[in-house]
Length: 495
Image (cartoon, rainbow, N blue to C red; front, side, top):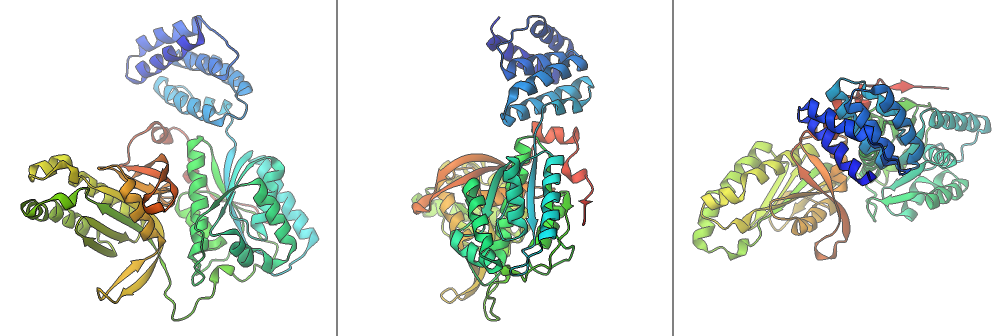
C-alpha cells in the first residue's frame, strides 16, 4: 500500500474517534498499523504514531514520535500540526498528552530591556550579563526571538540569539535612521556597528514609516507589535513562550519602555524572566520633545464601516434604511459606548478605548445588518456592510469646520483604506489589531490570517486578518489539555 493511502486512512480513524465511534476508529487504525509503509518521510512515522495512539498503545506511539522527530529537520509547522492532532487523540483515549513533547518545538521569546547611560562601560558586568543571556537561551531551547534593537539590552539579546542560530525578528517602531538617532547613537557609536550587524541578519518589520516626536506611543506601538507577533508565532507552532527582560524592577509612568513592556506582558498572562540590570538606565528616549501645548495621542481601537451600493437607493429605500438597519446600528453603537463616533451617508467611523471593545461592536454590527434583516426591511442585500478594524495611537484634534472635537491619525486612514477591500459581510483587521487580540487573555474575537492584500487608493499592500467570533478550534480546545504561559509564575534571576 502506498503511503498516500495511509494518510487519509489515519485521518479517518482520528475523526471517527473524535466523533465518538471508538471501535470503528480502532479498526481503521489497526489496518494502518498492521500494514506499515515507510517512505523515509516524517509523515510516515507520524502516521504510525497516531495509529498506535488511537489503539491506546502509548509506548509505541512515543517510539514512532521519536523517529518522526529525527526526520523532521527544521519543519516546525509539521511538528505543530502533529502535536495538536495527537493531543486531541490522547485526550479522547485517556492517554498522557505530554507524549507529544517528543516532537521538539523551540521556545519563542520576546525580549526587552533598558538602554544604558550614555557611553556606559563596565567590561566585567557586560561579560557577566552576556553569559547569563547565553545560558538562559540555551537552557530554554530558544529558537525564535522578537524585539526592538535599541542600544544596550536589545542589541545584547539580538546578538545572543544570532550566536545561537535562533531566528531573529526585529520590530522597529519607525524608519531606521530616525530610530538610530533616538535609540542607538546617543549611547556611543560602537553600538551602531552592532545594530547594523544584527539588522542585516534579522527579519525586519517597520511599524510606521514616520515618527511622531511629541509622545512615546510610537515606541510603545512597536513593542506591542513585537509582543503580539511573538505570541501569534508561538501559538501557530504550538510552542512555549516567555519574555526575557533586563530590568531594574522600577515602575514607570510612561506608556513605553521596559517597565511598560513587562506590565503589558503580565496583563496578557505571560511569564517574564528578569535577568536584572547592571547599569543605571538611561533617560527615556521615548519621551521625545513633548511640549506642554502639544496634544498627546491615545491608544484606540478604530472601526470603519461602509454599505456597498448605498448610492443606488431611492428616497423610499433611504427612508426604510434609516428607520430599520441604521436605527439598529445606532442602538448597537450606543451599547458599546465609543469614545468617538461619526457617520456620513453610507459610512460609519468609531473609536474605542480598546481593541476588545472595537471587535465586540464590529461583530454585533455584522450580526445585525445581514441579508436576512435587509430583506425584511425591503432593502437590497447588496447593502451588507464591509467592516475594518485597526489599533494604534490616535490624535485628539478640533475640527473647525464641523466645530467638534474628534480624532485623527494614520490609524483612522488605514482603517478607511482597508474597508473597501473587505468582502461584504466580513470584518478585516490590521496586524496591529490582531496583535492586540493575541495579547488579550479574554479576547472577544478570533483573527485568521487573510494574506497580503492591496488596499484602496494606493495605500499599500498590508497583512490583513479576517475577524470572527471566538470559537472552539483545535488550538483553543487543547488549551485545556496543556499548560499555557498564563499558568506559569513569573520567574526571576538577578545578579
